Length: 352
Image 1 (cartoon, helix red, strand yellow):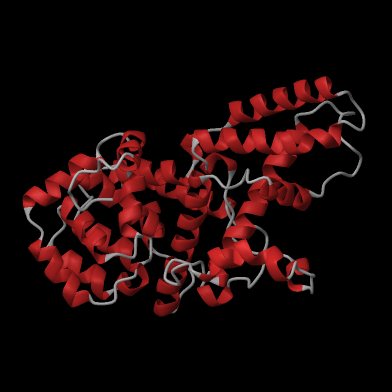
Image 2 (cartoon, helix red, strand yellow; image 1 turned 45 degrees about the horizontal axis):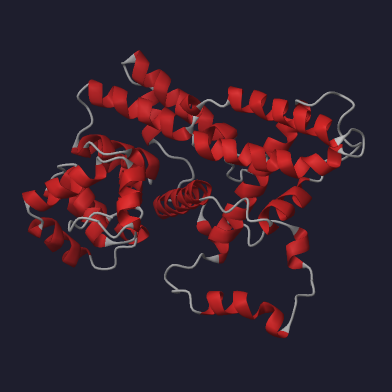
């Protein structure tokens, strides 16, 4: 979906006139918003897409939990999941770094893919379709599985969705427990608090037992890249073809695999909007100068690159020791890196 096709808001009630607190009642929030760096702020399109995906995800989790409760436990006709989102948001329970990171990454991927295809004058990509016809049956099956998974992540209006399996395990658990807690008072109409707790806990455990990270978009993309790598085909030309079609997730997976770093770190560098981080990733992945130049000349502006000439010079200037130091840092456990950063003990390499 091209950026110009994105919804400008997710709900009708958001467009209707709603009284807001005036004067000093809003001052704390307004001060934070006013002084945010404009370059880092969400666009209206990003906010709308991320909000729609979040609402859909919370609604799916709530419906699964309700389905797992005994038949007479739920309040009749209590299917207003918008109220659940409002309650959870007001309590700060949706402000999870892993969840917001996934929402933002999906929004970035959607924008880039849509823009690339709009430039080419077509709505559908051909890269995966070609792989479906591959002579290697395992590669063909993996490409088809990825196409089908993408189809399931569109609603009836072709709007992007996130499925429960896409969530990292820790985020999935936190979201399930948060939604279950928000459902609790709805059950108290018919049963006692202890009974509600037991039923919601059981429903949450059952839902988490069905969570399968192997069905996530990242896992399916990773499996396809693994097979391509195993067949000796994860070369510069394949990465270039994927980039030419705006296949951001696949490019991140391929570069991460070649750089021997986690896909999340590769995607963070790829989508950072910083030429230094992108060039460092390309050097870690040992891509050719020709591929680096092709990426800069093609989707480079969509990746936030304003001056391709400066960045290709940066690509040339990075030395091996610096690239190796960055790789070693990124190969450490993410939680350990986060702790070191919080303690101000980050090493002097450029990787972030």
